[in-house]
Length: 305
Image 1 (cartoon, rainbow, N blue to C red):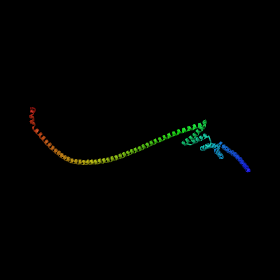
Image 2: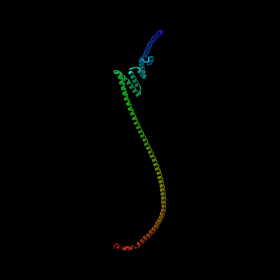
Image 3: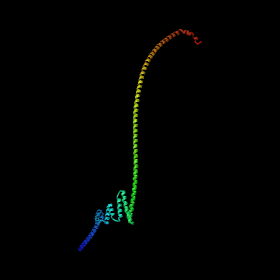
Image 4: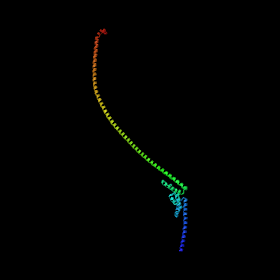
């Protein structure tokens, strides 16, 4: 028994020595790995640095230094979500977690998401200020991000107001467009009505001209008929006149003949009378010759009244 106890003690001692020796070697290896990761970090090869930090964390899961280095490398890579996860494994790290949320907010274009990240940042800054009231950097960062939130809120309000104004302007423009469209339709309708009126006027004018032409044709026809009738009447009158003239001529001829006969008779009578007068004159001369002596005898008594 005593011999067994001694052997057991020796075995335990050997195991303890081996364990202590292995621990020293493991710790030495971890810091060697971390140091290699740091070397890559300093030359900005963050992927290689993270690779060595992950090897180290597999050997020692609760080493805050390794998580802090991982968080820094992820932060430099702008992978802020992983950085926050690693920072949360480190105690009293309000500043870096707040900064990571701030970086997340600044990297997004979504206004609502941005404000959410900024508010998370403020929460960690405020928690850090409560733990460390004299930390000026925490206070500065808190005021800075708080001002950004106020500016963003104002910007959102302005955007909302502008959006409402734009909507109102669009509604007004739509109303104006509808009004203009209605006016345009009215104008088109009025123009169409005007064109129809003008077309009707033209048709009426053409119809009126056709009627006038037809009336003129009828008038001309009537005038022609009247003229023809007048001409016929004139012709008839002419014929009647000619006939009357003919009759008058015959009558005049008869009268002329009668007149001529009368003239001839007068001439004959005149000649007979002249002959008679000549005979009387001759007789008178002869009588005077026979009475001349008597006349002389009675001459003294010519003026005895």
